[in-house]
Structure formats: C-alpha cells, structure tokens
Image 1 (cartoon, rainbow, N blue to C red):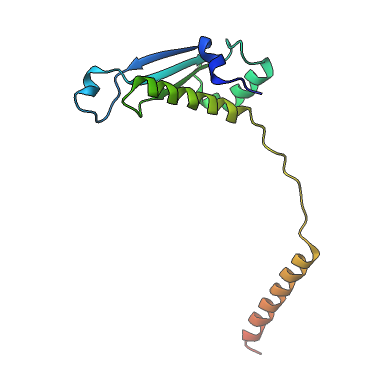
Image 2 (image 1 turned 90 degrees about the horizontal axis):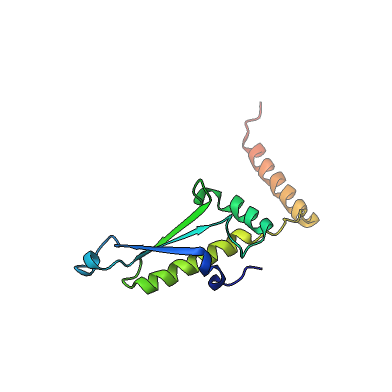
Length: 134
C-alpha cells in the first residue's frame, strides 16, 4: 500500500522556472513552471521491494543516478502547478506498484468450435463449386 503524497514531501525538492508558451507579460516575470525532483533509492517511505519494483517499471524515466524528474506548467499559478505535479507523481508511483492480474488460459466452447468448423466447411464448398470441372 502506498502512503499519501504528503508523506513524500520531505524527500521531494521543487524547482521553479519560467514557463514557456503564451501568457503575455506574466510569462516574463513569474516563475510558474514547477519541477519535482525525487531520489528513488534515498526514499525512507518505501520498502526495498517497492523501490526495486518502481526502479524496474520507471527505469526509462529515471536519470542515471536514480532521480525522478517531473514538471508541470499547465497553469499560470505556481501553487496549482505544484499540486498538479504532486498528483502526477503519486499516480505514477501507484501505477508502477500495481501488479497486473495473471491471465487465465481459457478454451473455446464446443459450440464455438463447431460453428467455426461449419463456417469453414460452407466457405470451402462455396469455393469448390466455383472450380472448373475437367
């Protein structure tokens, strides 16, 4: 079970910068883009098996030294972008800890097999009737 995002706050560092894109004069003076930085292996909140699982699932999103970087610049408000990136971080961890349900092997029913074979037989007869007789 994953603890709430607030439990990770002491381990997370936030960095702000100016957001790109439209925004008029506001974009030139306000640092509304928020970047979240979190080091996976230094986490005290997660257990070792959880760290290993997250490391496997998020391997391509981690830097070489195990740092996870997430950024948000959707909103004009720095606080709102901080909330967005925190929610995204928590969802990412939840998804990476979820184990897929094992697939149960099933067989087609006897009636389905019979219908398929009957259809093939009808199609074969149809094509056989089109052949020239020699």
